[in-house]
Image 1: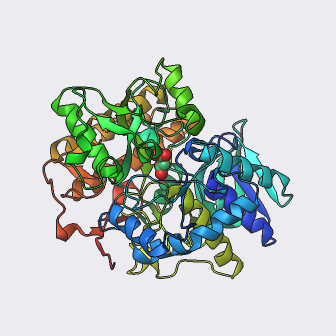
Image 2 (image 1 turned 135 degrees about the vertical axis):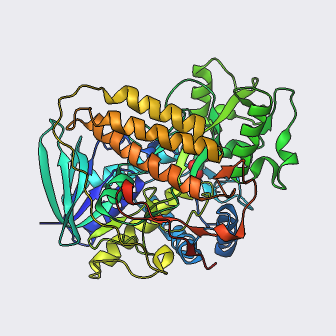
Image 3 (image 1 turned 90 degrees about the horizontal axis):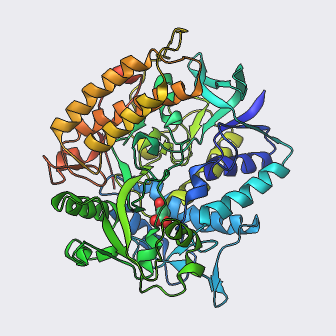
Length: 531
Ligand code: SIN
C-alpha cells in the first residue's frame, strides 16, 4: 500500500511529495488537471520570509497577526515565520531562480508588511517559477507516481480512519486508491464567485470532502478578496500584484483622488481586507464598476512586471501611461480543514496543508505573500510527523482546545439520468455568491443566499451523478453553504468578513466557528483564541 497519497499539485502537494520521497516513502499524487494547472502557477507577488538582517521573525509574526485581525493562532504563525527562511533557501537549492538586485536577493514590499520581505521570481511570475522547479524535481523522482486527470470524489473512511480515496480516472473509471496516509493539498475555492483570480479547478474539493467525511473545518467565512484584479471579463481575472503598490502605484477614484491615505496609516499598503473594503465602498457610492490603479510612476514596468504588462497590453492598456481599471475578486480562502501544527486533520490518517487547511496562520485575513510560504512550511511538517510515526492530531494550534466530532455522513447520490446541466447551476451559484456574499455582506442578503443555495442544491440532484462538473458543483455548494452559515453566525466585521449591519469587530466573536459533519450538521463552536 502507498505510504502517502497526495491530492493536488500546487506548492503544498509538490513539496510534500518531494519531502516524502526523500524520507523513503512511496507517494502517489493525484491531480484533477495537468500538474501545472494549480493556483500556485498564478501567484505573482512572491514569498514572504525573513531573509535580510534588517528584518526579524518577530516583525513578520507581528505583521501576520495584525493582518489576521485577532484570529491568527500565534503558535502556528511562529512556526510559519521561523521555518520559512530555511524552506525558501531549500527551494533555491532545488533550482528556483529568484530575482536579484545589486548581487542581493531582491525584496518587494506588499500590503500589511512593515518592510520589504517578499522575494520574487521572473519579476511577477513567482508561482510559475516555483512550480516549474518543484515539478521538475517531482518528475525526476521514481518514488512519486503522478496521475494527472484523476478527480478525487471522496475520502475512504474505514473504522474511523482515512485509508485513501475514491477517484475517477481521466476516462471516467472509478477507483479506490488506498494509502497509509492521505494529504489534502487541493487548494482553494475562488470558483464560488463570478470574479476570481483562481483557476477553474479551485472548486473547494478538499474542504467539501473533509466535510462529508466528518473532519473539522473552520474560518470558511473568511474568503479573501484581492483588491486589485484587472477589471476585465476574462477568467481567471488577471491579478495586478500588491507589489505594484509596493513600487509606488496608487489607487485613485474616477476623480483622480488617491483615497487610501484617508483609510489607513499604511495608505495604499494597508492590509488587503482594508483596501478591498475601501474600493468596494467607493464603487457602490459612485455606482461605478471599478476604481483605478495608477502605475505611471513605476520605471521599467515591462522588465519588473512582465506578466502584468502582458495582461494590460492584451486589453489595450499601457501601464506606463494609462490608469488600470481594478476591482476586488475572490482570491484566497483563509479558513479550511482544521489541522494541528503538523498538518494533522481531526480524522486519523488524514492531513491537510496549503490553502485547503486551517492551521491558524491566516486568521481572518491572510497577509500578502504568506500563502506560498504556508505550503512550503507545512508540507514538510506533515511528512516529518508521518515519518515519526504520528497517525492523528495533537492538541496544538487551532486544535488546542479540542474540536467537534463529526458524524460520518458520506453523501449518497443515486444514479440519476442527467436531466440538468451542472454548468448553468455553477454560474447561478457564482452570481449569487458575488451579489449576496461578497466583500460587503448583511444579514438579509445572507439569509436570501442560504435559501437560494437550497434551491440550487435541489436542482443539482438531477445532474449526471458520475460527471466531474457535477462533483465540482456539489463541492462548491457544500463550501458555499458552510461559508454563508458561518457568515450569518458571525455578527461582526472582522478581517475579510464585513457585515454592513454589524460594522465593527465585537469581542464576543473573538473565536472561530468550527464545523464537522455534512452540511446538514453544521455546529458552531466558538473556540477561545489565545494570542
Ligand atoms: C499579489 O501579488 O498581490 C498576490 C500575492 C498573494 O496573494 O499573497
